[in-house]
Image 1 (cartoon, rainbow, N blue to C red):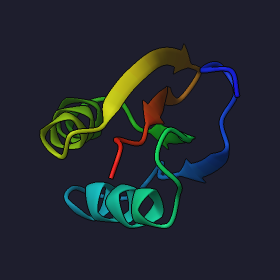
Image 2: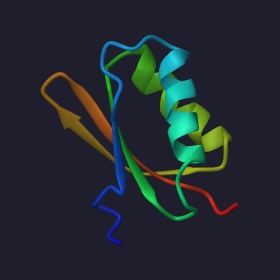
Image 3: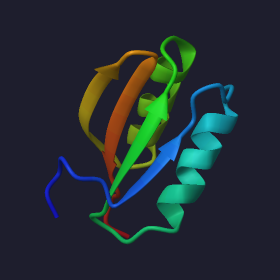
Length: 80
């Protein structure tokens, strides 16, 4: 699958830290290695914390898109 196409999507606008990272992590745990998760986040603290935490877990942020009311980040799940 193309890295620009998400296998799963999760919209976490309005969800506070660290709950948005926990929800992202749980969603990634249900996915297969190499699949791409599109996460929609608010600007500010979520965009500073969630991508950093995802990388610390070993996953890869492959793309970031700015949208009207936040950001979409595309995360490639690490190999198990």
